[in-house]
Length: 243
Image: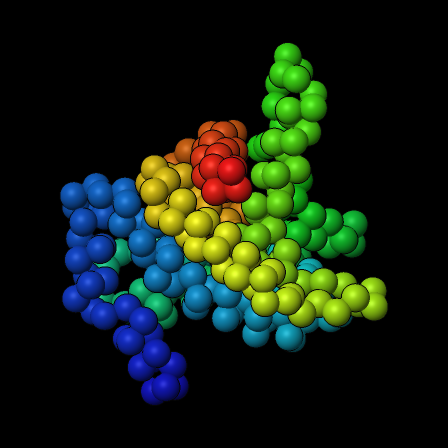
């Protein structure tokens, strides 16, 4: 127990956290909500992983449980009252565990097969689709390149299936990948604030578009638009590099 409390204190220094809550609740700084969420995101994921290990194999998958955990964390942030003297970590744990239990109970067997990964891929494709009036070849190229950048951001593009091909890149390819990733990192640092938050939360942490919308007080459609805009900026940056 002491080790867990110590981890929380190391993760969120009390003075920093107190400042975030004060600015969020009394000065209405909406950015603080996202910062609190990010600070406790690892806690939510850890609880989801523990709960997943206790569930039957045919139940909700880990990705789904992580989304339920994030939902509980968002609810905890919105309902927490620091004046009651209860540490937020302890308060959030109860909400997160309850959200995972409720979400898992709501899922039917068919829902469980439609995993978080499938939902994320569907959201990305819808975000990157262009209007029917656009050149279909250009639309397809934008869709493919956008999805490819998403894979790079996740790191999934570096994983090669067991098809008999040596997955280890040669020296030139390793340099190329390092340069591309450095270019992407620089591009993300230059994105407008909301676009950067969406890219970080979705690709680094696996937070769904729906929950990012809740986090930023936007509609899911607006998050989808900003996601497409961010990948468009990153795509143009890579295009300039290739030339």
